Length: 176
Ligand code: OFO
Image 1 (cartoon, helix red, strand yellow):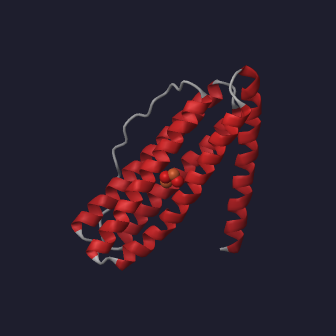
Image 2 (spheres, protein in one colour):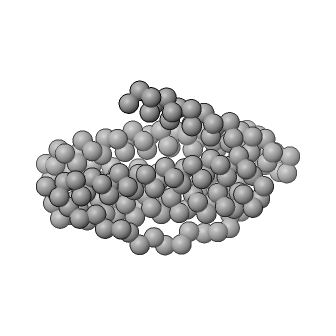
């Protein structure tokens, strides 16, 4: 049984995951318009992933006899200064999500809520992986440098990263 505070906090976490999904969708659209197909494909997939993170919490809340509330999601920005600044914003948002997950963990200790604590472990691992991935992308962007010629290589790099993410997910699913 969830405490009312925990139920509310989990509902708020859903809003954060839902916003991430919309933000990455908006970023994907910007990349598409800029002709950055590799970046767009990566971000469309990330957007879907965030939606699945939101639904995982949604299903959990109802499973433990709470009430999952569909969140109101504010409109994300539509324009981005550059690919580098776009991925910096992704990284910043991921760090915010991580901090929020850690707060939920603290709350589950306070509530002595072992079920939610256990449920949240998946998110702890996911956030570690996501932050590492975004740092890796930013490192590569910095190495390649910016400018019209570099964009082509950045986009190819993102295409490669996206494909390896898809392959890793497929092998995870096979194991499950
Ligand atoms: Fe679900 O916040 Fe990113 O991974």
